[in-house]
Picture (cartoon, rainbow, N blue to C red):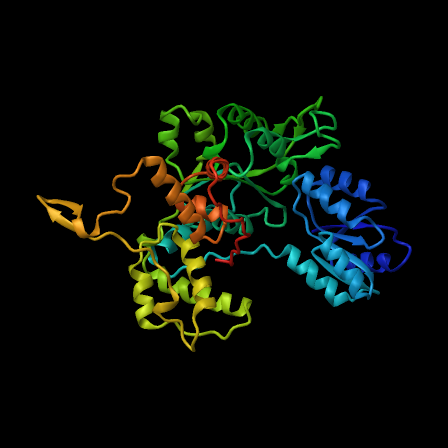
Length: 448
């Protein structure tokens, strides 16, 4: 793990750096905010930033945001509540009083490096998939993980990395659907200073940041075909070209890609390169949907109930038999992610000593009747949207789903089966038309 210390090391901040070193982390140092941002862009693998209060915390946080870097910033300074409140208001994750407490710094280091996510399952179908993942983890072969949204593809990718020979190396993820197409290439391969408007410093890409470890390309099917050719070359040659660079850069990376789309169908439609598909699909792992692993529903429901009870300072309460029956009979289009969010909400909403059926909210499904061997909706339960235009129905579905996820764009896109980029474009259009858009929120994901 690499930690960046920002500020003069002559005083108490130097003691904090010594504690970080004693805890086994690597330490980089920058005297100023400008040096810090340049070092982070050039190094790419810092897990934590400890910054003296005399430095410009707000400017550091804004610089990281501008460079799309999410490394947490801890402010350090005298034990003063007003200074601590100001640092957090300026974007710091937390505040460490000086002189530094070794145990407190150790806790922050542990939290920054704790990326372990266990694949939990008791269903034989999923256990078989997990056994296959364990068999191939030790190799350096590229892996393609497929499955519906919410089945845990990134969790499985981390599991493979943690059980590989590269486990001490970095695990770096790039969501190909979460960034505009114009930024994906820079994020993937990096850029030199002045390569384009706004490139104020050299920035290494995800490939270089993952050197010696694993690079996860999440939702690879969303990558533009033109960029797929550059990715193919990087895989074949084991080297990349930074935007604006003059010489190739060698990389040693294991690739794991995920997709919730049918990639052979995307190849047939000309939206995905066949040669890239074969390069990525050395080993394939298909994650089953939750409906195909029914024994995991109760198992995971109890796990999430315990996890979110502890997280929210609530007692661990049992799920009643009636509530569990409702969970086991639900559709779970969002798979494990939807079950997780449902249990989180139920833990917060359940008023008594148990989590009963009243704590859950499930959408009502239309009742179907058989007519001439076909299933059709009865007149009494006909959808209220009959007679409305398709665009009206689509807008209502998207906004209702967004409300259901409490504004979480990523979760809503997963439930709808569309990319986050497509969802954002729709919401922009709806806002321009005067529709009320639920504000964004940050979803929480428990270890699985």
